[in-house]
Length: 134
Length: 285
Length: 122
Image (cartoon, rainbow over all chains, first blue to last red; front, top):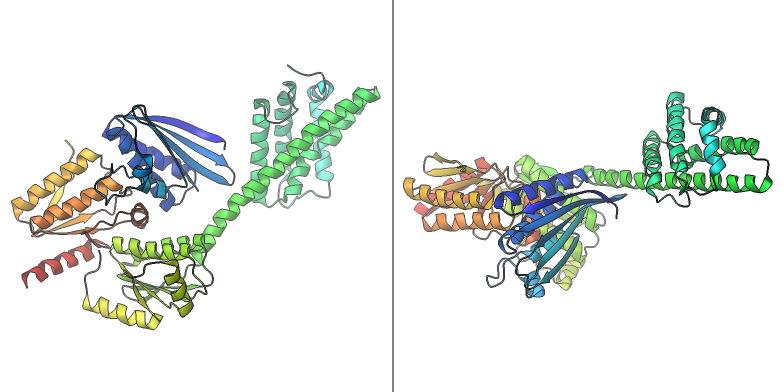
């Protein structure tokens, strides 16, 4: 799908997480998403940005606005070179209520998005991509 | 690297741009398909002039086997814009395509004047035809895509407008749903109910599904999510009008309604709601 | 250093969250509120989140924590003004905000707090 705009933001501090939320919001608004869809995307982005910072040791996010009329969407890719997630399946299953898990909220973020993919290698890092359409 | 074919087409557009433009505009104004009611002559002249001026440099690059190369980006952007505005003005897609196609005649006339060799003429005519056909098709494609976008947002607006949320009493809202619910409609309707709850400060919302013949898992889930969301916000929901068939479906689907107050009829639900509101029972999680 | 202001209204404390908080600020609010509850012997906390456009799991946990801590300190908590989009998202996320009472607006919230406190005295 054609890319309309692209931006890369660093995730190295808590203030950066706030900036990621704002950037995700702006992109969602620009693509004409409803308020509820915007909120879902921004909330998912917030979860993943926090993971990147707290679990991944910091990293970056690429925010891309894509369009193939009549579909318009936003895709975010979170990248870190942290410890990686040893059992992705388990991490996706863990909810917030199960205290034992990593508490990464990946399952929740996935439910909020139309598109979700995760690539993680223990010792190398993690890449999570989410997307939401109008 | 400019190819040899199309050389004369390019030359014609450079040498005779003014004449081609004048002839093209004349043809458009004389056509039976002209929509003088939708567009003023000035605008037509301007659009024609702009397209021609963008066409020349694109052709000069020599790459016209496909419109994918970057040389055609500006022309495509311009045509996409024309499609959009013409679509909004009310033109039919064929009328917009004709805008591009009618450019063939003036170009063909000039080519016939310039080229005496039959084969060379055939080659150049072919190049001109291919380019203009592709551009016309692109225009139609863009037109349809834009229309899709407009239809989608109109659909959503219609769904939102047709949501009949009724204020039964102070603090009590009712949402009588009628007809078959699909996932999208249910979502829009539920979001609108939550919004109404905030706007009216309602304590209780009654969702009545007497007029809904069937409910599938997705719809049932949306209903439950709406009830949960309302509770999070500080309001309560009652679902009324669950007919025997729907009750069976819900149990069969394994949907858990134990957390939700359900009543057979809207009237029953209203009575419960009144009692709650008058007793000023605390609401919320 | 920026802080979320905490207002006192009789025996209640009122907190209005109007900024997009970073995590540190949220944790600071938790601390400050706990201190104030003890300092003024507050009986209730009203948290106004009507300006909050995003409530993710961290903020959700903060809200739950505040309610839990207040409860230990013998104060009731009511959260008011949750936006529909936020509520829908929280449901989707699976965050139930267990143990947190909510009301539609400040007026309702105050009424609820008064009832809860009165109920305790019976």
